[in-house]
Length: 521
Image (cartoon, rainbow, N blue to C red; front, side, top):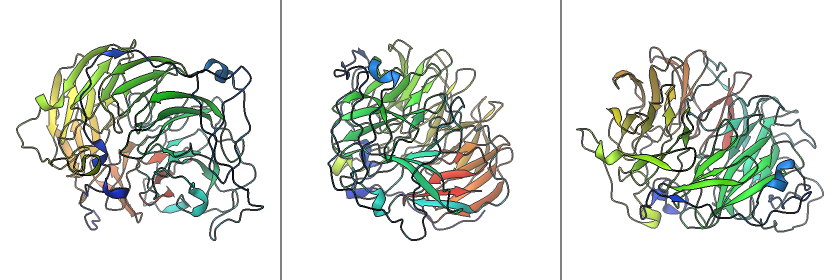
């Protein structure tokens, strides 16, 4: 295995001295009771659509009148500040200019290649496509940090991508960065080594931070939450539904839903019937219909980045930073909660006392709660990693089946397990020890692939059993999932916290911590 320098975990890893780990500052633990949904604001009249937020350098998209818009209850959205449009835009050297028109990112009637965080509502992490098994190289790039991609009111002042992306049926890639821009990218029509922007979306002074967008079943609509008020301060949280088809420099908004005066940085999950589930920092879990109506809210616990997972019976499994994972039934009633602190195992924890802005050493350094998302097996078992460096298997009734102790480190496991096609093995990366393969039957270790750094990016498992994982040591690894042997590794020149995605053409696509989107094949 090729080993480069170790990038040690830095508690103040993101801008302003308060990092990803600091962002999980604790608060009071809400009681796990069902809460009524806040009524959305008045919907626009039938035939009218709400204003579409856009980058200040882009003209707002024309209003649309989708069928869902009239049924939704969107919140009012501030119009972007109007500035003069330049007469012409010149593409930076080495990059192709964005075309006037581009093919629609959505392929009507086709299942997206990657619909949501870790592929599906169960977060299996399995792709139906085969990625590169031989030594890969970088085929295309796109830099999100160039001046033309930065809004005048960024949610964060520097470009960073700590979220993952999703992929449409035609290979379009959707990903959001820390300044608060959601991008739709496609292969450039004029440069074989580049990607190009199809559209950008930026609500005024708001960002999605760790949120991975989610697509509906045919890829025509994309969902993502944005919050104003800054990384560590309460603000206003909103869930947006956007048309993926290009309609100018910004997409048309289908609807938006007010999530309250809080932060939303977590990834939405879309159920098989189209319901969207997303958690907030205030401890509310929202269930929103595909036409923008709030079905219910449940008080669980504060959420930093965890995406809920769904069982076959519609149960929603939601881990939080208050030390628990909650099971919520399809009507929004809490069935049970699983307390990680009551199932620690014999190995001492490694923790740090929160301090400084936003909690300082919080966000997993305390060893409490989870910043990961669950994976649900066909038998209903829930697999979830926690900040205490343990991986748990939890039965559908909330009892623990087994616990696996990974090597101890602050914010121990922030990745979501990928589940083998036969459901006998889970694969996950940890903050220490590299990649682990664990038997689902009893929690015993099958193999371990050491990495001299940390892994915050969840792995993707391709149709041939190849596991792809990005790391903080700036390398992307391909590992044979059966043996744990390395197939190849690639130095991508920056840290990867974005789960790699496999496109229908067999290439891998991801964004790095420097804001460069890379296509590998």
